[in-house]
Image (cartoon, rainbow, N blue to C red; front, side, top):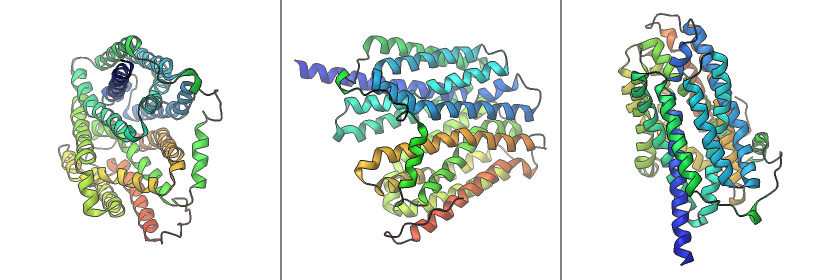
Length: 416
């Protein structure tokens, strides 16, 4: 009797975690096409709008960088359930305050809180690891990734459609979904970490810089660390400036951007979920990275030169190989270290991504602010994409150089 009941509870817990991740990311996606427009209500020029949006995005990323390991360490000490529920409730409250924000300063404070509560993904990962046997963990994390991807696919388009009625409506919608999720979890979510398996809280374990320091020990990976960093920087620069850029250059509305981001997410999910294995068989991991990076570099350049909005869709569809390059690169990095180092290696890569979330918006919006006043058909309007192309091209060069080295001779680390 107990075994079937345990399996039933475990399945319910996994379902809740998947719903939580989907709704969290859906809430984040809802405001992607809307937040720049909300910032625009409190600014008087495109330059000022770009600067403030960059600052808000950077603060959000900074809080994620510090809070992901912090919330994970707190969940190791007090259990997953209270930290996860607290994070969900905090996210709901932050969305409500977003909807009623009356100034840029209030928006800045809200983004700080929102970035911290959005770090609940790290606790959700730990919960899944608690309730899943090692041999089934890969499949479980795959389902988690699928839930995350679906949230990013549907969030922007739903947010864009809701914004047609009212610019603040997407924030109320996200808050409502999070509150329903909190109530559901409060009554059905059991604790996954028994008290005898909990560990004392340690600031050393909660320090995100410890993950970054580990990178110096991964000599066998060599230049691939910088390849990953450059790729993430280019990717997040694109993501954090896309909405403002298309607004300035093509006059796109939140709905227009919601649809475009929906297509972008659908392409990413389709390639990584349906074509990845076929592309790996066709090219192999190393060649797929190089081909994908080449495609991405060219796509960034074309994005910058386009002066007609519908052409952006053509580039998104033609750039499908770039979506497969990232997973292939992560697989190569994973195979370069032993089983005992997998966790800390992936943690280090996540730390790099978090830093990219912090600094990419500052770079992107600063450049965008410099050219936002130019005529839409001026080639300089695409400067941000030319920078992305340069970063991605450098990543391509470092990757090609690394793959040419004999396997037993690590490439010297070269700072880009």
